[in-house]
Amino acid sequence: MPPQPKPEPQFFKSGVLNVDKAAGETSFSVVRRLRRLTSAHRVGHAGTLDPLATGVLPVLFESATRLSDYAHRLLSAMRKEFGGHAEKPAAGEEGR
Image (cartoon, rainbow, N blue to C red; front, side, top):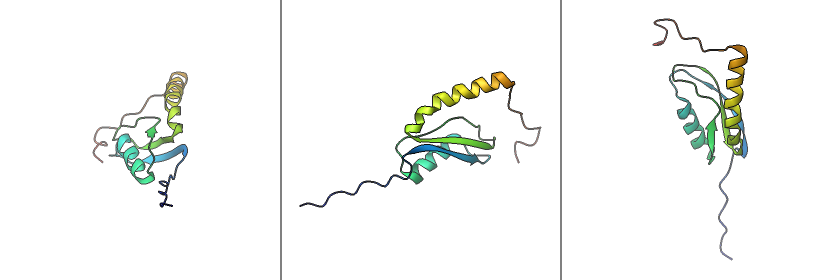
């Protein structure tokens, strides 16, 4: 009987991981690094933070990536309800 190939280890079957994104890092770079670290096939994020912004970036794995559209609609509804808007950094703070 020939040896059977071992299945690839899969660390995240499905789920959401909240990542504290540092300034200077893009949302895509966070997703790319987690895809490489976890060997997950489908990885996405449920919100875009520009490279200068810091904060929580929800990263979705495998079948949880289907939640992305729902998360974007929810965030839009919350912004409309609460009148939220991103505060811009004061002059000179962007380069820090």
